[in-house]
Length: 144
Length: 189
Image 1 (cartoon, rainbow over the protein chains, first blue to last red):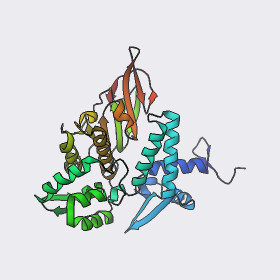
Image 2 (image 1 turned 45 degrees about the horizontal axis):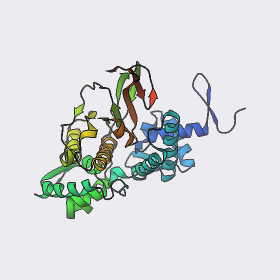
Image 3 (image 1 turned 135 degrees about the vertical axis):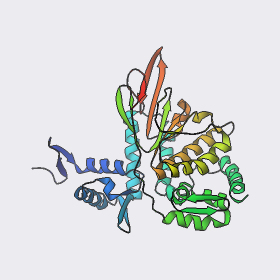
């Protein structure tokens, strides 16, 4: 008999536990906001995934008309950061650890909302001289 | 043609507006920033992701929408949008104002050559800023962005994928995501 959190997949009957599934789906969603149908074309499976991730408050869902959109919640993003970190450790760590962790934190910190113009400025952009240079060029470009 | 928002002498699609950070909109657009931020925040843009498949090191690899770094090897990417050779503020301005417009017209993979030689001053600041802008573009338009750089630029960002080749004791060794993958040679799909 299988544990409650074990699932059988495919013809080869690979047993995948709940945690492995969570890792898989968090990695698939990543920093994007996706349609439920993009999680899986199989509607039942997609609903199962949303239920599973929702159970642990790892995603945020919102409806826009007929569309249901899913993105990682702050808790989900935190787990996702750790997954990325683990992958880097396993397959190679091109950055010094501290620098890498800082970069991940900055990237993920803005990730939830960077594309909807509401993110806070990450540290590498604070006091970045190029922002001021661009501001002056852009104003004259836009307003003449 | 998607809906265009006219600001002064420029017109922006909603997807283009979503590329900007709030602070950029405030600094670049002045008084109308609040309205633009509200428009961009309320818009939902869902593009089908564009992805590439290449053959590298004898294996097939998928390059997803996002930022990929390539070093020491040339990949041929048919139909890609190659960026012009702008430097410094012209380069950043192109990324923020012109590249999204090109992608509004056709969402193809983007290729940036010599990313590590694009700045003649404030090099590190410029490099991370350009990676940040390119990441946002890749995320909003859901296209792969391939940047060619060196070992230093490879360390400056958390790339979705990295491909590189280098000489080790006279022999060419190639890496995928930092992991050795045998002799060099890359060819397009």
